[in-house]
Image (cartoon, rainbow over all chains, first blue to last red; front, side, top):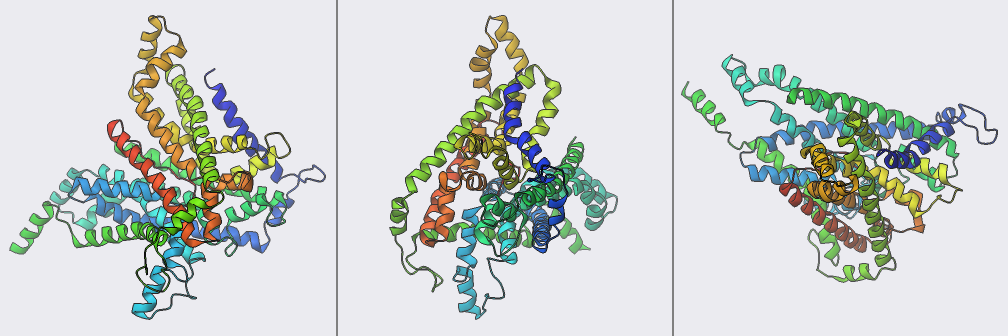
Length: 273
Length: 280
């Protein structure tokens, strides 16, 4: 009984629309018959490229985020002062939520054609950043996405370091293991589920991103979320069926990430016991 | 031999090491530079020819507050955030309470339902809603947007409320209340809600911060029909950079005040920081 209002809202605004979206991706609007035409249309270069770009930027910023975020997380975890450590964790908490338009715009201020760093490099190093680099391009988007990916990984990995007990390190050392051996045989295997969870979390986080990309690259770079956005707004005269097919593929990609994430976090919990 | 001994001795005392200092310094630099730059840009007279701004002015804030949609977009953002919080409270609290007291077996189902929104990119949710409800009375209305934003933000309300509910013995409290003659509704309002209040506040603030900054759903479901603050900001990034910077500063000042409140309440109650993907 107490479940009913909640389920009703979920049905109205989540499950029913998603069901019709999936159905619509297989439906020919004119004849109301089932078809794979929308999925076949995805083979066009512009759509293939948008999937390649989206997967490329999500994987790249997820890997950068996991590698650097883990190192930074470890550096923070090993800090002797509790207060400074907590301040850095709070900083990560705030900055990972600093995204979308304000973030994109901040990067235009520092790395746009007249940006602070662009000017600085030109004046003191006589180095012209443009046109080799552009904040309105793939590389610019990587920098902006890394901004919210890094702190998210820091927040994800610090609890995992807490799980590596000091006694393990001490007993490994007393048995003659050096630092590399300890990390290779004990540290990294214990961290693996958290690293995997972080990787999928960051991947999904970047894949679904829209506002940052919309402000920064709009139509200069084709991404799945931007394409779907164009189809809703009607800015480009596309068949909405193609947008639905793209959405269904995105749901599958996101779904797989969430499943891996769930399995990995269950493993993490097992270590924590 | 002596050398080795001193080095192990040092390691045991956990000294700050060089790599640690460098890494953390770079991290702080990367995290703060965009924020500081925006602050400075919003008060700089001109900052495209020199490293430091040529002068300081408050004119962009004056212009920002005079912008034609400034107050209406702030009002719209507030309406959207507050109504979402209200819907969220009315739906999530009874559900969490019900599951804890009457149906503990359904807990894992609820947990999964609360993870699902993270698996749906906001553009996909927007497309689905627009496709289904266009042409119906609900199509392209603020009510549709509130529903969409509720789905997208419900995990932020659920987590703190659910954690708070788990930390109290809701079943015993309910039985005690009922044995004294109180109805379920009375128990919930007079006993349960006061006991999970810190969770409710944390959840509400998280929802507020998320919805106040929401751009994707608002733009794609309502667009120009219902201009919120983030929409105005994006519009100005293409019209006037300095005013856009002033809008940015206003928007993240609001977000941070709320983060500080969350941290402060989190310290008083139980910690409940966000560790979930948000829409960017």
